[in-house]
Image (cartoon, rainbow, N blue to C red; front, side, top):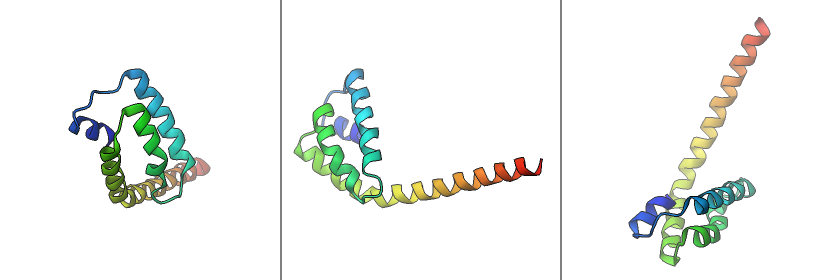
Length: 98
């Protein structure tokens, strides 16, 4: 989403170094605010501003989009976790029968 907003506002792509630093902080921030509805974007705004050059309009847009997509992403996460548990249960059941 951030890359799309960058391109729609006509900003330059981040350098590879800035992208890696942004990615590191993004992953770290996402783990630090697990289970807080809408908390991910609040923590990410300073990182988006510092490493990708977001201005206030861009941050407002990504916040609105994040709030709209957060329930869908959460649903996909829960369903994915359920599928993973079922897969692990099937593998465990097969290994116990052998």
